[in-house]
Length: 64
Image 1 (cartoon, rainbow, N blue to C red):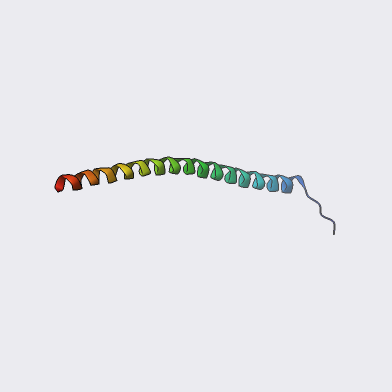
Image 2: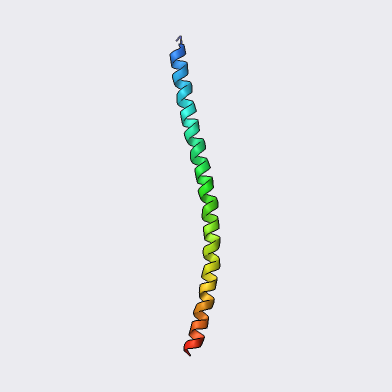
């Protein structure tokens, strides 16, 4: 079987590969960015949760 590729086919395949590669790269970059943001928010939430527990303890002591 003899396979011949003309320039249009090669450009179409190359363009498709480039578009898919760009989509993959940009998606990975956005996911990495979201993971960093999520870690930051999670850390802040942990700190605030600890502070909330301390405040609740103080309120319980004042109620007694």
